[in-house]
Amino acid sequence: MSNLHERAVSQRNMLERIAAKIPGFAGYLERETRRDADKLQRDFCADRLFAQKTPIKRVLDDLITGGDLDGITPFEKLMNRLDRVAQRIKNADRGYSGLFDTIKVDEDDLMRVYEHDLGLTDAVTEVAHKVSEMDAGDRDKLMARVKETIELVDRVDAFFSKREEILRKGA
Image 1: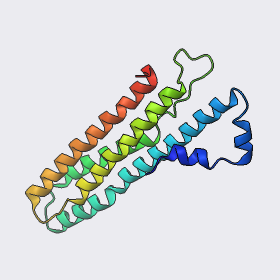
Image 2 (image 1 turned 120 degrees about the horizontal axis):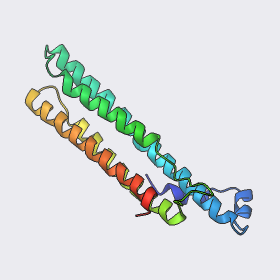
Image 3 (image 1 turned 45 degrees about the horizontal axis):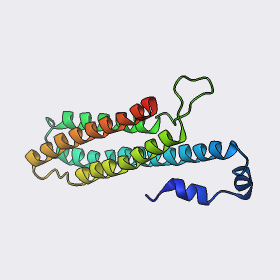
Image 4 (image 1 turned 180 degrees about the vertical axis):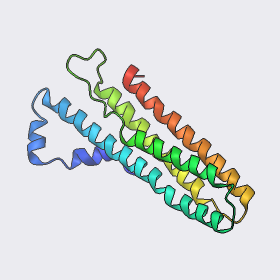
């Protein structure tokens, strides 16, 4: 994905461009644009993670059709992890801070969150690549791929946890 923030800024309508010249409002508009771009980025990543369940189910169906019922549990574990992480990404805080909140989320913090979420796209692409390598032909290789993919999804989850730290601490 290209830089959504820059695209959003370039596509502002005339009223938004005029409002951006009002002292104080420009910063507000910039933060809202960053939040919107960040939300689009996170929705893209979450949807891509959800989409990985379809090819996984196909491989699982092939495995079951071949009579292997013992291999179901790791696949269920993987699909549950994908669901959990995708929901967490999709429903993450947009980085708002209230007027009287102790911890304020400023524009620099929002930029760091946005940049962090751009890195999330690479991690999600890696998950998709790993899923695409799954093939029911060789059971041992398949089970190893499923295990590797579970570990990768766990790393994506841990990477995403750093986002909350950025919002909390501004680090």
